[in-house]
Length: 211
Figure (cartoon, one colour):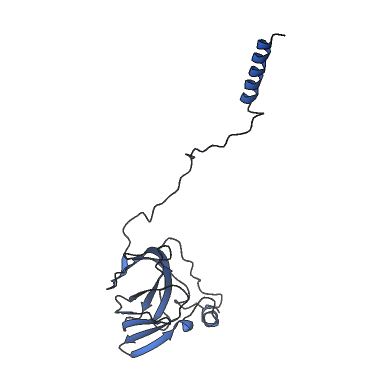
């Protein structure tokens, strides 16, 4: 048999084998898929009502805006007519935004139609992504309160004058530290420790908020 003809036949068979998808191995693709979509949008809609604002001397800009993104299910009267106090369950949400030269954050908190002993407190932490942990206390307070202050166990302190029933306290620092609030008003001054604030799993909350 002619050697040249044999060589040509072998080459043809090899080319055919390489072009057969059922026999060859798949070659990984390095192309970027074009059918993937990632949304990076923030809230889109009408301007949200401003509930509270504060610009601190240390450079924090804090805003609280009305923001109801889901229906809040508040229990109605029981079969016996008993109704939980308004401070037991939130009736709406608010949108908290905090910005400075070092940190930026947007968080969602709960708003209540009534206050227990004239006070509702939510603790927020942010700024870890920027390496600048920050603590924010959002207080709903009785209109009689004229000054709200916080002293953290690590020495950080802040104070402000409430406006329209809101007080915003912000200091650098991470989670884990304890704090004490001091509320000054027309009827005097009182202190509230963080451990004494009602929570949804506390015995006090279960006693007052369940029939």
